[in-house]
Length: 197
Image (cartoon, rainbow, N blue to C red; front, side, top):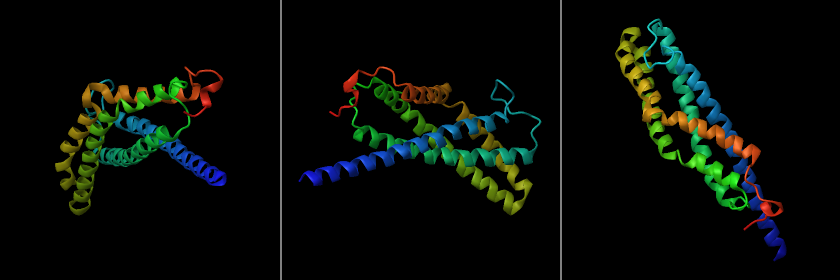
């Protein structure tokens, strides 16, 4: 009986470690991809505005759209990994929230923005699908076919960046704050902080 319980605990510890690893790798890809996409998207606009830079030629624009679509796909996949693994880790981690305020704080900083992330994910999917249509039109009919999609792609991109009046920017700052909170672990009670419930 005792061996069965120990085996069960080892299996649960191993599973928790797997999900913690997935969570860490997912966060790296997701937050890194978010910064990467922001840097690329910044190339489109006049600094400090959502007005498109008039000097961008169509080939540069297509390359930037391609990079934004690819990074958006990476961000969507890694965010889903983070969401699932964060839920599993919070359910399985043997730390009590009342003794580890940093864990509660990090969870709140992440989960409070899930509805905003779902909305912006929908916008990202729309952009990716529009880009695939534009790319297929370009391959089939050349630059003239692509021109019909430029306005729609620009409009979707501008809508995505200005979505929810800056709430995604606040969310990103919140996520980076959550990472700092996890590293520094403030609001941690004394010696019994690691005892399970």
